[in-house]
Structure formats: C-alpha cells, structure tokens
Length: 276
Ligand code: C2E
Ligand code: MG
Ligand code: MG
Ligand code: MG
Image (cartoon, rainbow, N blue to C red; front, side):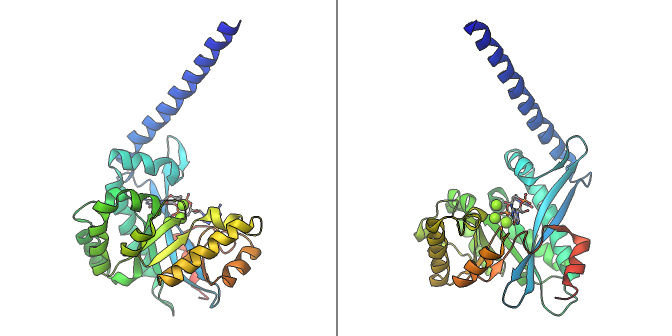
C-alpha cells in the first residue's frame, strides 16, 4: 500500500513538474515575439510627495498581454526574459515607451519624471548609455526626467561589472535608485561607493509598521542611513494612513502605494496630472 501511495505521489509530482516546465517553455517561446506583436504595455504608478501633496514622478511597470496565457505580471516573465537574453529588447521597448510617455506629461506646471526598472543584463551592455541618450534625444526629453531603478539584490550581486556603467550613467545625468532596499544584502561600504541618488524602502518593511516594533526600528535606521548618506528616500507599498504618519515622523516624505493610486494606463496619467 505504501509503495502504491509512493508511486502515485511521484506521478502527481511529475505531472505538476512537467506542467510547470511547459508553462516556462511557453513563456520563453512567447517572449521572443512579444515586442514585435505589441503585446507589452506599461502601467504607471505615481510617486507622491506627502507634504506638497503633489505627484513628482511615475514608475513604469510592465505588463504582458500574452494571448496564450492571458495577462502576465513581471515577476513571472522578467526572470525568464533575463535568462534567455530577451530582456535586452524588452528593456529597450520599455525605455522608448516610458520616455515618449514622460515627454507628453510635461505640459503642466511641475516637472514630472519617469522611473524605469532595469535588469543587470541591460546595465552590462556596453552600449546602454549611448542607447538611452539616443532615445532621450529622439523624443526630446532631458536626462533629468529619466531615472533608473535596479533592485538591491541585482546591483550587489553584479557590482564589479555594473559599477563602471552606473558611474557613466550618473555622468550622463541619469539618476539611479536602489529598489527593494532592505531585501538584498548591501554592505555599507558598497552603498558609499555606488553612485545612487535614491533608496526605495521595500514594501515588506512598510507592511508591518504598527505591528512590529523591531520593524519600525529597522525602517528608522534606513531613514537615518539615507539622511546621513544624503540619499533621497521613497517608501514603497504604502496602503494605510497609519503607515503614512509613521513614515512622515521618520522623515520619509516620498511615497508610492495603493493608498494613493494603483498603477494605471498611460492615458489615465494625464487625468491624475490635471490638478497637480
Ligand atoms: P518594483 O519595482 O518594486 O515595483 C513595485 C511593485 O509593487 C509593482 O508590482 C507594483 O504594482 C506593486 N505595488 C505598488 N504599490 C503597492 C501596494 O500598495 N501594495 C502592494 N501589495 N503592491 C504594490 P509589479 O508591477 O507586479 O512589478 C513587480 C516587479 O517587477 C517590480 O517591482 C520590478 O522589480 C519588476 N518590473 C516591473 N516592470 C519592469 C520592467 O519594465 N523591467 C524590469 N527589468 N523589471 C520590471
Ligand atoms: Mg521599481
Ligand atoms: Mg520595489
Ligand atoms: Mg519589488
């Protein structure tokens, strides 16, 4: 009986495994054609300054409408795109679209920047800076309106190869933010030499404010670190008023999260900017 059970468990397991493998395979196949087939789109989530109550910028977040599997979130397909190398052409599409959209937002009173998530593989490309400068020139957007975000994990894992590239980006006037800060493993020494302008506190830290005093202590320490290193600070995943109050108390005024706005399509951005 035990043997039978064992065997059937193995069968179930293999069934699931091959299903997962085929999903991954289907994703990898689809990724190769997705840019040409215009299956990607960008959503934008505002970054709000809570004292002026103004939107200062928008983060571009990719979505893939893949007819075979439906709407896919980046966490499912970006890792695959990084593995296959497809991230290079996808990333270039994201930059073009985000820069063009950002250009169209500059009609109001205050300047609005766009921030684009970027993978280590993109940054490693020697021609990245030239490409970015080319797109900015073509669309007529100044460097200071574009910012790049790289996750702390990706930045620190590849630091030797990425550091020279980031220095060039900084020299070109494109600011860099360290995304999901607190989830990677930055040595403080790297933070000092890495040419970043901004720390984005990962949403996992914001989530447990008011539930866990230790978590509060950690965020406070992050805010102090940002202040001492003269870095801009943005809190991600802000959903509740209590979180806002605490973040203000510790000197974090720029926030992003469902409390303010879920990510929206480009045509809704103009509406959000109407009274900005
Ligand atoms: P991220 O850069 O940390 O982006 C924030 C994620 O948190 C987004 O998920 C956003 O929709 C979600 N979010 C924002 N506010 C809240 C909130 O209040 N509560 C909760 N629960 N979630 C919130 P999304 O769009 O699924 O993106 C996931 C990750 O995929 C991003 O994390 C980023 O690392 C990556 N990604 C997105 N777009 C791109 C891209 O164009 N290129 C690359 N390389 N990576 C991208
Ligand atoms: Mg990000
Ligand atoms: Mg993040
Ligand atoms: Mg994240």
